[in-house]
Structures are given as structure tokens and as C-alpha cells.
Length: 92
Length: 233
Image (cartoon, rainbow over all chains, first blue to last red; front, side, top):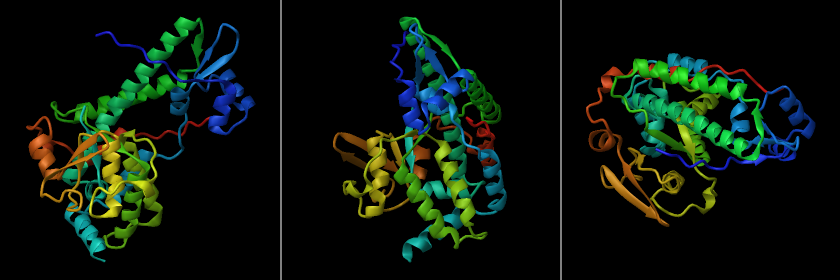
């Protein structure tokens, strides 16, 4: 099945900097280090795809470990107990 | 690709009771989110290559994104190996800031009523768990101007999220959201959604109907995620 390509949203260096609240220089440093995705135009200018830029950012929390720790703490909690707590809160 | 919104009557037991049926549904939604995100990344990259080719540009700096896509594929494969062969990979959860705010408010509200009690330091991780499961977000809207849709004003942003997102189902065991027992149809401004109880969703709408829920372990939810410490510097 043929797919129709959609136009990616491409940002200038200044627009990317404004989006992330960093300086133009920081964006250029990331580009030089290939830490962010970018298109280099025939003119020598750069364009940064917004979706891929945002996807390349990541937090420092360990979601998996967080979930495992929560599951360990609440291992014996039943759905009925949670529903009873919800009902009690609603009746307050 | 069925899209569903979970209200707190479902999302709270799903996150706080690892052995329950609601948690098993969350595992499938996380599996759907992984598949969806990997597909979105691939199609986004294909669009970019097409754009670059058309404009004579070169593309670079995708190493981090490619690595992230590989990781998504590995986690998807790991879950696929564990889940029953007929487990669906296309059910997606939809979230919104008002949904997550309401979830967080309820976590705090019931926190002291559970044993063990929920610590304040656990509220953020619990919210992140729900945010991670939701593959799609809705456009921002002003909660104060949400139309009146239910008999409890606090539930209106939940229903409105489902309407705005054109969700197929709003899953709720709250009688204010599903007042007719098992199903209630909402319509507003050209959007519509079917609100259903969890039992009705699983018995009448969920596909495949013969999925063996007993073969799904709620603890597998953690397998959908991994530690990511990479940070732009």
C-alpha cells in the first residue's frame, strides 16, 4: 500500500533554541556533536525536525525501577481495596 | 486501532494492584503504546528522508533516535514473547493533563486509606506510570470551560478528553460517568464516545474475545520501560 508522506515540521536553529529555552549556540553545539537530529541544507543552513528533536530528549528517572519498587510495596493490595478506598473518599 | 480513555476508577486499581485484571489491561495498553511509538518514529524518519531527498539536504544526528527505536523494538519483542500469542498490539490509551491531574488528586485522596499508605514521594512515580502507558495526548483545553456532560463536574474533563480525542471507549466503573449500568453514549460538538464499564468492555467490545487474561502477569508492565539516563548536555 502506498503511503503519502506528510511534511515534517522543520525548525530553524533559532526556533529550536526558543522551543527548548536554550541559546542558538547550544543548538549548534548539539548539532556539531550529532546529539540532535538535523538536516543540512544545500545552502549550508540547518533545519531541525521538531518531532525527532523532542523525542531525543530524555529524563533521568528510571521508570522501570520506579514501577518495580511500587509493585513491591503494593504487592498485596487488591483491586477491591482500592475501590473501597475510592468509595470511602467519595462518601467523605 | 481502538483508542480508550481510562478514568480513575480503572487507572487507580490498575496502578496500585499489580495482580488485578485492570493491571493486565494496562500491560496490553503499554504493549500497544510501544508498538505505536516505534511505528511513529519509523514513519517520521521516512518522511524526513523523503523531505531531504526532495530538497537536496543531508540528514544526520539520528544516532540517538535510532538507538531509541531499537530499544523500543527490543522491549516490544520482549513483551511479545511473554504475552499470549493472540494478545492485541493495537489497543491504545489516551491521556490529557486534566486526566493525569485528576489521577494525582485521587492518589493523594485515597493514599491514607490504603495499607500500605501512599507516600508523597510515590505520587510522582505513580503519575509517570500512567503517563507512560498513554500513547496519545489530546490538545490542551481549559478545564474551567469544559462543557457540562455529567452530573459530577469533576468528571466532565475526563469525558471531554475522550470526546476531543475521538476515543472509541471511555472505560469507567463510576456511576456518574456510566449512569445507565454498563454503557452510556456521549455526544458533543460533532464528537462522540461510548462510556463502558470494565466488565462491559471485556465481555462485549474487547477483541480478541477469547484472550486468556489468566496468562497475563501484571508485573510485566515494568518490562515495557527501561532506564534512560541519556541527557543532552
